[in-house]
Amino acid sequence: MSKHVVILGAGYAGLRALHELQKGNNELKITLVDQNDYHFEATDIHEVAAGIQTSERITYPIKDVVKSACTTFVQGRVEKIDSENQLVHLKDQEAISYDYLIVALGYESESFGIPGVEEFSLKMVDIPTSEKVYQHLTEQMKAYKETKDENYLKIVVCGAGFTGIELLGSLHEGKKKLAEIAGVEPDKIQLYCVEAVTRLLPMFSEKLGGYGIDHLKKWGVNFLVGKPIKEIKQDTVVYLDNQETNELNELTAKTIIWTTGVSGSHVVGDSGFAAKRGRVMVKPDLTDADHENVYIIGDCSAVMDKESNRPYPTTAQISLKMGEHAGKNIKAQLKGEPTKEFTFKSLGSVASIGNSHAFGVVGKMEVKGYPASFIKKAIMDRSLFETGGVKEVLAKGRFDFYR
Ligand code: NAD
Image (cartoon, rainbow, N blue to C red; front, side):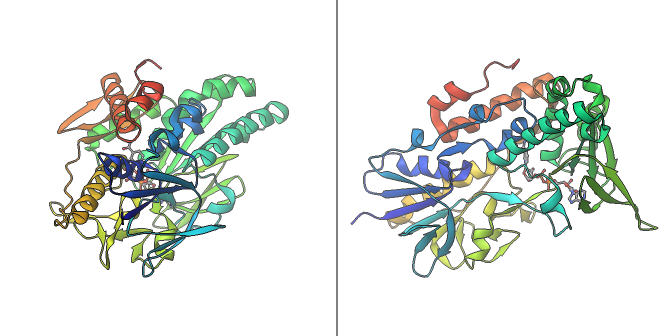
């Protein structure tokens, strides 16, 4: 009887695994589960939040990449994995049994237990939350028009990691459209970023990171660095202003967006896997320590980089590689062959700041400005190709580099 592989999650890791398993397959039965009927490009959601891109532009239907001869797509919400009985429990649907499981459930916003984050700040982790940010922004602009209260024109981004920086770049670009709604000049919309540490973007050299930050400063972004956020209250960010005296200070704004980092899906820990912040330290072949038929990949997974002796960072690039690797290892297991260790050589990473500026590292080379933006779009097209193939690249790819 043919074996059944269940893939949980249709993000970068899950869809790349699907692609690998569907290739030349005539013996496997595959089920793909996702709560949405679309895949979204998680690296681009800040553009939707800032209103410079529509969500249609960064999503495509999952059915486009499902080969119905071997794969069934189930739209449903995974609640728990019962690895002892090899069952996946879904909300309000029948459980699915598996022979092999690929857990690729992605990430969630991490509040670090800071009071008020859930209630008083906006998340930006997927399509609905990103659309909600933009909807909120447009409402604030309309409210300014009526009240002339300048707090409606203030936007605070919490955290200056990759996500926060890319969001600030897009918000700068989105200011023009927002200003029209408010009936003001774009410069009247004030962007703030509150960040805990003083050495920003530690993955880049100080000079390169500084280039990106200086660019945003030139565009008028106000950075408050070395100011850990201690609480979010209604329309207020409370931060530690002086580490020696423990003096707190407040910044008021009607829009507060929380981008201080992510954790892996809570489902993983809830299901009894040994997760820390939703990430499981997997074996070198990407299987769970206690279950050789369960692969945990993407943002739910932590894999040791032997060179640095630290887990690899979570990126779209590594998720794609993990998806491919898990697919290949399952094929090997089915043939009774040994699985292979996962290795990863980063091709580099590039942060966009708006549509035509970016900075980052490609191979060993530092890139910045318009050429970096060109490279960033090529990287995006490549990711799109790896999950969606030629069809999606032609439909949604970024060839119009001036867009
Ligand atoms: P991150 O952890 O990289 O950055 C979060 C930032 O928030 C850090 O600078 C941190 O110091 C700050 N912070 C944390 N707690 C704070 C507090 N209480 N007050 C103020 N600041 C606080 O998280 P991210 O930016 O969401 O990125 C998550 C992962 O996704 C990273 O591995 C990142 O590299 C990756 N990513 C990559 C890309 C890309 O390659 N283009 C884009 C987005 C995200």
